[in-house]
Amino acid sequence: MISNNFFKLLMDDCEICQKSASGKLQLNICELAGNMAYHAIMLEIHLTPKAGLIDCSSESIQEKIDIDTSIASANVLRTYMKEFVQTGMEMKHKEAWHLFPALQEVGLKAEKDVLKAASGKISQRGMIFTLGLICGAVGWLFGRKRSFDAVQIRRVITFCCAPLTAGQQGSSVTGNSCYKKVSGVQTEAAQGYPTIFHHALPAYEKSIEAGQSEEQALSKTLLVLMANSHDTSIIKQGGLEGLAYVQDYAFDMLLHPSTTDVEFEKKILAFDRELKQKKLCPEGSAVLLAATWLLAQLNICNERI
Image 1 (cartoon, rainbow, N blue to C red):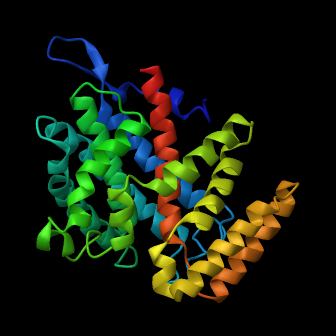
Image 2 (cartoon, helix red, strand yellow):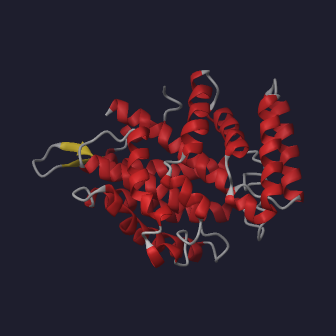
């Protein structure tokens, strides 16, 4: 399954290859996975239209954050995504549960720089947390000369984040950052992101295999996530009632699929108006969408390298 030419374009980029000590060319996994993570964020940002989220034609309901601000924050994260991979590689001689503190340190720096670049309007906490874990797992696996497909990445993340729900990370987890009391995110991570693996990734891959475009596949996958995710952003904004509203609306759209792209777009725009009126922004689902795309591309890379 090849969803687009992204992998080919990266393989044509000499930066993803580097010379080893013996002079042989080898894969630069930091460039490959780090750039993929960056593009995952950019794809999520530019996907248009989206319900309740920033896209090319609408702002966020919170603090009037526009797409330029989101792009600026993503550009900051490009370097940090590579650093997450490098950190994972440097931890290859330790067990997976030792990864989190090292990745946390990188995440704290990333969040600080994003806030600075975005004038304090956006932190990208969810993206930093989730994509940082994926990139760190890729580096750790690659360093151990193991497969870095989605299943293996999930196993590493599960071990890496197990202490979060067991309360073994202490005060370091409850600092002022993307690691502060995001119980829904932490539980999702410790369980190996079941919403992605049980719902989103199968939906995305099925759509691509059916011949749908990248945009069509991502749009449907986002609805699948909104219908199945216990989005803590929605809960914070509208309580469990708000969460149920978003899930039911998205599920109804999936249950009654549109027959044309024009009809689908109209329905999404109507959904968008509803969410903005209710001041609901499914940021958690947006993060999981980027993660889903990244894992799908890593599966492709793992098969071809």
